[in-house]
Length: 234
Image (cartoon, rainbow, N blue to C red; front, side):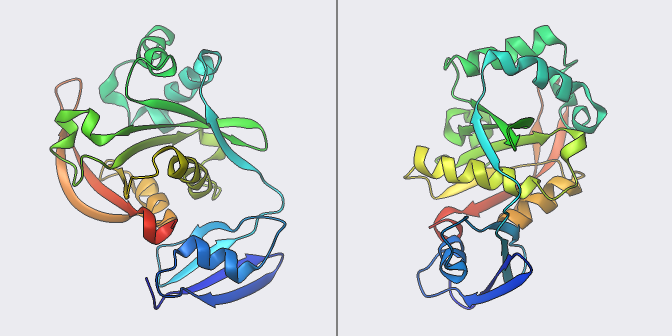
């Protein structure tokens, strides 16, 4: 946990610090910023220097999904930008989206659904679950007690640096919901370079590649990416 430098960008200033022994990256960023007006959020945690930023202009949050959000989810899932990575789940019709996500929204499935918001506008979704609650997937992952996460941002908000912010908003909420969890786990398609880069910027590290059976009988090669909760968040 030691040896890393932390840089917090705040209104044109670069505040520099070091990660102390036993200190998380997030705690080091807060201490370095010494600011009460906003929390530092990740800019790029993939390098030796952990870069955070204090964003005074944008509020990024996640909230519980409701059935009223399903038309937005359907629209997002129907765009080619997202559709290509979820193709194995079949045609994203409104009926199929409701059948898939409705029980999760109602608390009838282990997966929980969240809507990502930027300045109050819905821009995508996140879903999470305890890996061990899905035995077929658990045998592929490194830790059945890890919290799995999947995500998608609508096309007009992707590529603008908000991906790590959305994932961080989910992570801070997940830290409270799953206080005993030590690992968060994502497994994007190995061809999805944008997703892999987003995970790296948020503090995930790549692990094993493995073949994951899909609902339509196909097999996708995915990259297991893990986040050490205590090291990154504390």
